[in-house]
Image 1 (cartoon, rainbow, N blue to C red):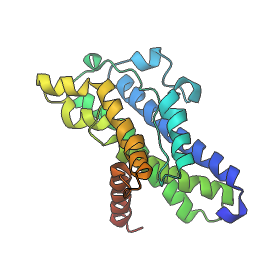
Image 2 (cartoon, rainbow, N blue to C red):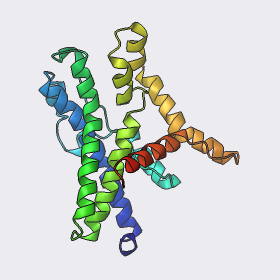
Image 3 (cartoon, rainbow, N blue to C red):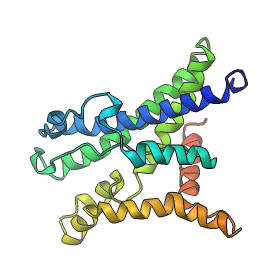
Image 4 (spheres, rainbow, N blue to C red):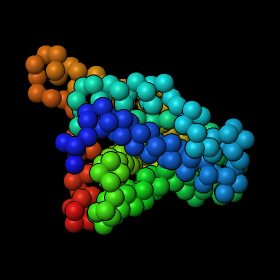
Length: 221
């Protein structure tokens, strides 16, 4: 199908699919928190599907464009985290785990729906079917990426946030250092390998490839 569409159209479709997956991921966090008693995200206007309310300069613009330019096998990013006041939730740690996992759950659900539509709705126009493919992949990559237990990713809260120990709470709150670690993982390690003519050092890509392959094998795709 892709040979019938121009490269620019494919790039636009890919970026739309990635950013829509990111926005729906964040809105899912905010809506889950709202249902469970915290209206912080609602008051901040972050339950909106308006992408301008969710753009993060690095995660929403620079990173996807950099990965696209570098020819990375995966294209993903993140939006500004939806504000959640965990102390306002009705029951800890249950509600914190639900809110933290809501974005991942929605991404997996969207991936399943878009995958089924692509498989069984053969009459859809090629441009729509191409979008469904990239939307499915974007949601899967975003879900698996967020499972990594590095703050501020959801995995840090899912794996450590419920532990009522100072070290665990300090780790979950160390978002600045976690973001630095992610930049090293995503950007610097692959660049170092390429700059010195070494074998590709890309643990994130290896992890995402393994998770995607495992998921596809699980559903028999």
